[in-house]
Length: 376
Image (cartoon, rainbow, N blue to C red; front, side, top):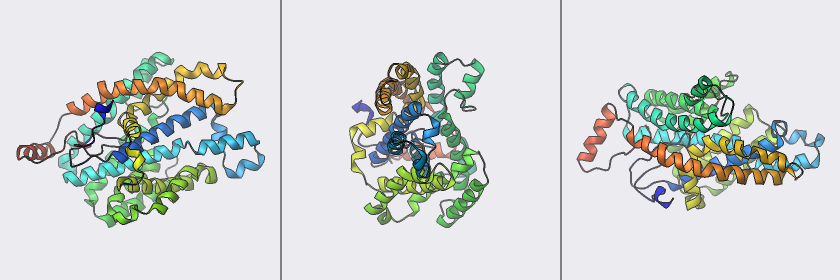
């Protein structure tokens, strides 16, 4: 496993599902790797609790507490510490931040570099999505046609988490279009954010539109003075807001906007060196396998399903803990295999197209450290 976690030679890739292949620069930002890994783990644990307690309890907030039994209140408070929805928001912001950094480093041009960017996106997102759907096709009663639709991210009927990949596909190309229109000028990017927020206000059920502001906020991180991201009080406040937003406000538009802002602060602070524990081996390893882990956790959940009936007399939190251990024990090895056998080989094999590829070849020939397996 240590061989999968180099300490140098590559910059951060794209956010997990969202994540991208590393890029050769002076030093890799291991903190962002670790943040991605912890976010993926938070999604998995949150899904375990959701399977045990059900959606109605997840949908409650502080205003519902007076009519709830104490046991439900306690579980709801615990569930706020495993905020799967907030973790996905971190993925979106992190994706916008890393992709925008790639656009800036390579000085991409929209029309000339669009084919190479599309190639990078396809090789990044689809091979693992296709491979991760195969075991679900064996475990679930699903038609071949519907399984293929899930593999191609045209549906999320087999694996519910694919909704976020559908958002990622649309939003990452929309962000590239924003880059083409703004070329990184801060006030133009702020205008794009304002327009995206207005569009989200009227986008009922259109997830790519609802969550696109998170990608733009990630892009704006590099425009904020670094001293802002070194404020520990700002980091503490943002983390608290990210974790408890849905508990206090419920799952609604206001909560979503607060989570976007808080996730932006968290990613900005971690990108500038905060939360050093995220650079440890376990968080960084989780970050390396986070994309296949995110997509295959349903396999672990499905295989652990019989445990729920056997453990039903136990307290719900104890069942959740056992369920989490069993499902993650299955998912981690599977995710590592997909990372080694599918994800990395496909990232290395993807073709380079157009002027970006020629610039990289020229830089390498001149002895300059050029990008390797670019985020696109």
